[in-house]
Structures are given as C-alpha cells and as structure tokens.
Length: 363
Image 1 (spheres, rainbow, N blue to C red):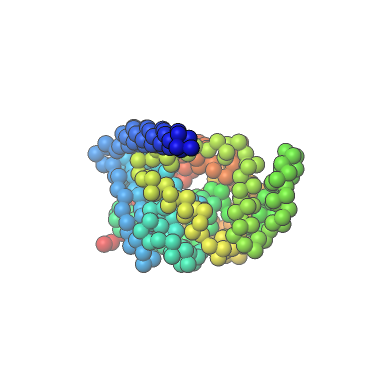
Image 2: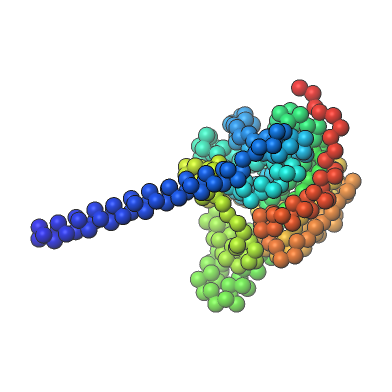
C-alpha cells in the first residue's frame, strides 16, 4: 500500500511539474508576442498621440484609450458592442485606421478596465439613459482634451443604440454618425434571427440546438439565461466571416490577464436583465426620423444579429442633411473587424470629408 501511495504521489507531483512548465512556457510566449505587438503599435510620428487614462465620467472612473499618427486628424470615438464588448483587444487590427483618424476606444461602465476600477456593483447603474449621458460626457471630454470643435461617432451593435441616442440629444458634438451592426427594431430583428437559427439548426441536424431553442421559445425572452442561450446558438450559425473574425485579445499589450478576465466577466456576467431587456425591446423609429447631422450605415449583408434589411428599412425613414447606406457583401455583424481595411476605405472616402474643423472649442 505504501509503495502504491508513493507511486501515486510521484505521479501527481510529476503532473504538477509538467503543468507548471506548460503554464510558464505559455506565459513566456505570451510576453514575447505582447512585446512584438507593442513594437508594431508604437507611434513614432512627431505629431502622433498614444494615451490611455481613467477619466471621471458619470460619477465613476472610466477608461479611455486615444491613439493616432497625427493629432490634426479627425477624432473617431468608437462605441463597442455588448454591453461589455470592449474593443481594446482589437487595437492592432484597427491600427491602420490611426493613419486617418485619432481613434478613441472607451470601456463603458461594466466593461473591462472600467469594470476593474468600479466593481460589479456598477451593473445596477447600467441603462440606456445613463450610458447615453456617459457617452456625451466622453465626447465633451475629447473635444476639450484634443481641442476639437466636433468629433465623429461610430456605434457598433449595442453601441449603435447608444450612438443614435447620443446624436439625437447632442448633435452639436458630432460631425457625423456611422452605425455598423446597426440596431433598428430589435423585437422584429430577434424574431427574424430566432427563426433563422432554428432553421439552420434543423438543417444541420443539430438536435441539441433545436431542443434548446424550442425550450426557451421565441422572443421576447423573460430572463437572462434565455437571452444567453439564444445568442450562443445564433453564434454557431453566423456567416463564416463572423466566425473567423480576427481576435487578438490574448496578445494585446494593453491587456493584462486580469483585464482579460474582466473582459469576459463584463461581457458574460455583469450586464443585468434590465439592460438587455432595454436593448432587446428597442425600436429606434420611436425616436423620430429627423437627424441634424450626416448619417451613415455600414452594414454586413449577412448580419443575422442586426439584419441588414431591417437596418435599411429604418435607414429609409431617416431624414438627415446627408445619408448613405453601404452594404458589405459577404460580411456579417463584425464587418468592422472582418473587413477592417475595406471598412476604413469607406470611412475615408465617404465620412472623413464631413469632419472639417473650423475652430477649436473654448477651455
């Protein structure tokens, strides 16, 4: 018996040693790749900008990253999806954008680095109204900090809901608005997406997915578990470009392992049913068709989370000084990532000309 216990002990210690070696090797490789990415991201331009900081927004400290090759370029504030879907990990992917724009990433309340400093209790303060005001405060800060008259606003998915509210409330802050993965009529869109996922699951013989969708029933959903199950199943049947959309979180030099933990915590655990219910019941047509600034929708033709036909239907009702609907064939919800270079080309050709600075704001 003693011999057997000794053998088991040696075996377990050997496994532990191997595990520690693998973890150590993995951490060393991650540090090496982070160093390489950091070198690739280094901004050496004499008029460039590379800043990251906490700013007091909405009564709490919120994280803002500002990067660009030329401070004279238009400022592009990106509103990430989710709630909780920080874009900080995509900094390398979007670095070509920094040649034409000063790109700002903002971790909204309940998200990644902002969540890190506030804790999960901030979930109770998350609402469309509160986070719209947060976004307006961020925009005002950027105008002062970067000495800009106005900025450009890009809203993705959940961020497109905030974006429309922001430009409706404070059009004076923005040259133009760009929506991608644009939310329009969410109850109608979810019904379409649910039917699509169920059809795809049946065609694939995915009995487990079919049973799951049937068990939660069609939208609207009455709990966050059902919402999570719906999005998880829909994700399995999104277009190839969405499934293969580049990552980069693991080797991002601006994210620690604790940041990565908070990223997933903020995306999967912190948002409450209240905020999801607000998003999933939204119908932006209720805000009225009139916009005082140019409006652009950059939509993936194969988007199943925010179906392009519904985005176009909403777009057609909009009255604005200028508007354009740009359809990206072969792309889905994450077109800003999967076709980032083409997306940038359209931003430069269609939107950038509207960002003409006349005079900086006062102190």
